[in-house]
Length: 308
Picture 1 (cartoon, one colour):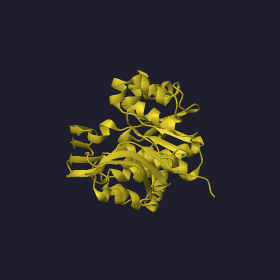
Picture 2 (picture 1 turned 60 degrees about the horizontal axis):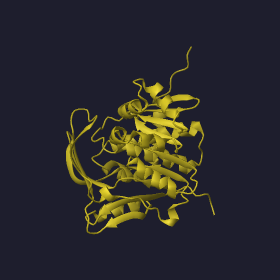
Picture 3 (picture 1 turned 30 degrees about the vertical axis):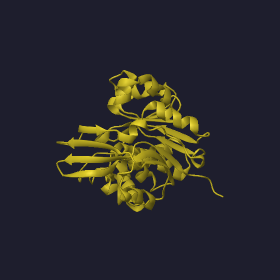
Picture 4 (picture 1 turned 90 degrees about the vertical axis):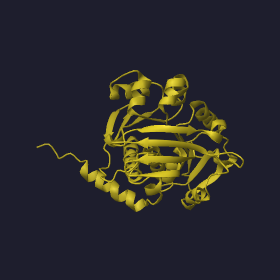
């Protein structure tokens, strides 16, 4: 029997309504757990924990299952409604204007891991309430790697809980504005270094179209973005990045700093695929071969010539 390389992903499962300069979509598959699972499942087996209502479309379940995602941890509240979010993007798609948020069954979400999930070696906690992230950690049995994401809502309302979770995980993931807010420092690298003091081994700062920053005890490394020219929708790009990262780490079983850099580049490549379609449409059609091809292209375009 080989080593278990499975990834546990806990987060939201949603239906999104999107408006962008490139098109609209109503009731599209969304949520942090869905984007992260679709990305990670190209690289490793995935076990998903979340909640949906009886209105969740069968094709959503079928898509996840077709990618080998284990849905034993997905709770279905038959008489309830799935979490729904509506947003509008303008201009360069840098940030969405939220039009409506209906938590529905997600409002009472209390993650319960099936017994078969408790030994999962790689754990990603999507940007759910940090108290729920802690509940998940308490239900796991000595995972090999843990990674968490957060969002500005929790930094505004329960910052100490965010700090507590980040002190318990191996990799703390956030965007640049969140890193600066959490550390109380306007300088990004200094903010990331101060966040390391909370206890995480690495801090990974997502910078959207500007790539990512990976910081550890030995310093920081910049990860460039893949230069796509087919930008359509940035929804879920950060969750895709996270899924790609932890999927690569699980697939290889290598937790070295150098391989973490590769994992972040894989995440950037997968995010570049996601943004080329509305919702999960482009990510749903992605292949491992496509990811590897873009990774090698990113290698070539990001090399600096030797100094003469």
